[in-house]
Image (cartoon, rainbow, N blue to C red; front, side):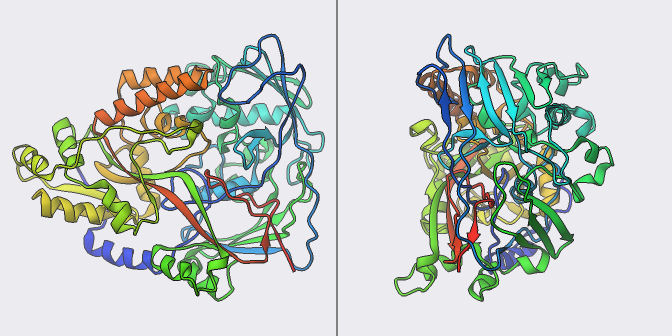
Length: 577
């Protein structure tokens, strides 16, 4: 039996924890690792300049012999906001784990990072990349060179001009293996910046510089790629590509507790386990926020957000499962405040093929066969989520993503496990999800397997995921950008720091790498579909469901836009009346 992960507690503690979890649900606020869904940012419209050509910035070939130019969208007129412009919401009880854009991994921390820092590009509500701190983007005809012209008013929160040198420093820093103790495989930047010329070698510790980044002049930076990457601009919208103040960072490891950011909000106050306050930065070049202050409750004040919302103490909240029927009732006064958005976010059970007895493919197959996956969505979660039938949510690249899994067959599963487990006990790990409890019940009742559920604190759970120490665990994952790579490459490529299984299949890597360079969207989709099926055929993952965001928003909260990515941007939100 594998050693227990750090700080794991047995089922008796889990029952109490789940009771607390179901008594109120905090609002998850965007990013990657999450336990529940998230919400999104306002829209702006990109414009293509130059010779007429059909241009879609990610996923289609560039016109031969032309340069594609993307201009920043025009400023959105300020709304007629009056009165106090303050938004109050509940964050993670633990508070953010880090506010360093180059190291952030979890959804709650990423939400705050996205308010304090920004990058060259962002996604609008149509999920198209548009300039953010950049004013203009020029893309060469071969798709290998991206030139970014910065806004001449872009600045850090202390008023210092944001320059091309800051961009170069930030991208070099995000790809520096020294950030993670020398092991560049653990850098979040691997998933987003490895297309840059020299980035893979730098993260592998094979070179000290990043030759693909060139400072052209004070406000112009050029990025050269090692290979075509149709989704490169989309990847630049993620936190590892955000711009940090190099003079701020050199002050030491704790710099991110009082950051000199580049985004629409300033970190004004942070009281551990109690409150985090963001204030508007009027110098944010794409347009100053309308909200003057955002108060994010932490600690005990974040444990019962649904009750606080109903008392008028919070302005928006995710609806917990236990309250959804009441909120949706025809006579409920909350019904008119409910907003529903399907998400590119899902939950999976992962089976680590490197830890006995899961190193036996027959054991993994039996564990998948012995579990009726769709019952989680239909029964345990009352049909409020969509059953997952693959590893990519429908709608990505404008298509469905069907796949084949072993059919539900508990008798065959029980027979296969009787001789192979020989009295071994399965350990299931969770940071609060109730799915392992259901798995325990099914495996003990239907398969005759002794099973123990162990609860971990979220920071310890995240660390053991990163260390690949967990044998069977539940993972909830939110896509950073609308491409299958944000699930398949991130979670299953052998080089990805988010491959928490340590899963390796050279053919899967080949398909994913080929898809990443393929400009024809139809061919890319075929490659990703083949990779998806090969991963499922290795029996390392049980797809459970795709999340749906059920969000209550006070009627006076205006300008909040939802998208399938679940990223909450606050700069265009305002309070009416």
